[in-house]
Amino acid sequence: MFKKINQSFTIEEVLLGLFIFLIVLGTIISSYLGIVNTHLITNNQLLALQNLKTALDRIYHELKFSENISTTTQGIMFISTQDCATKTIVFASSPENIGYLALIKDNTTITLTDLDLIDIKNFNINLWGILNPATPTINIFGQPHYRISSTKAVTLSIEANSLLTKGLHIPFNLQLTVQPFNSFTGIPDCYFQ
Image 1: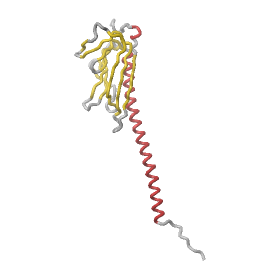
Image 2: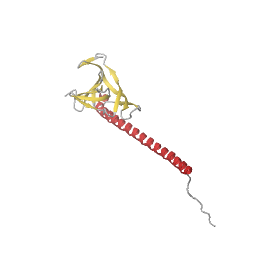
Image 3: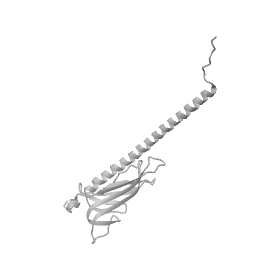
Image 4: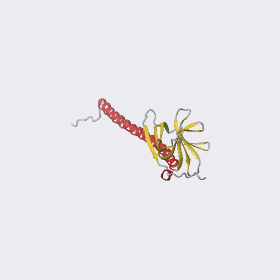
């Protein structure tokens, strides 16, 4: 009469289906982890770049309102036209050999770059202006300085690496050019104070 039909899967069919399911699941998980890892690396690079941008914005503001700009062996020295204080932007290394930028005013050091985010590898300064042949080099606080009588522009070149991307070294190479306000008039703002 009626024949009973067995509609269940065989063990081979179940194992083949499970094998295909595990391959698809592994591919999905691998892709997801790759996307998450790329997102974390991008976020960390963005944090480091934002920290460097904040430091460059501060340096730009300080140099824009400055006069008597000269270089030192570690950075750049100037007089701020806002408060007539002598300030220095230096490139230094921490005990862990991480390079950073700092602003020194009245023997107070303000770290401009976060030691946990970014490692400054190189810091170069170019002064564009008219050299004063009468005093090509002077000595301030035991440091040699190269005086420019009329600074027209300052260019800073910075090479850095993010510290949050372990094993992945993507360098930042940034340049900042600043033309101080008094470079237009040539009249020192702090001369009469």
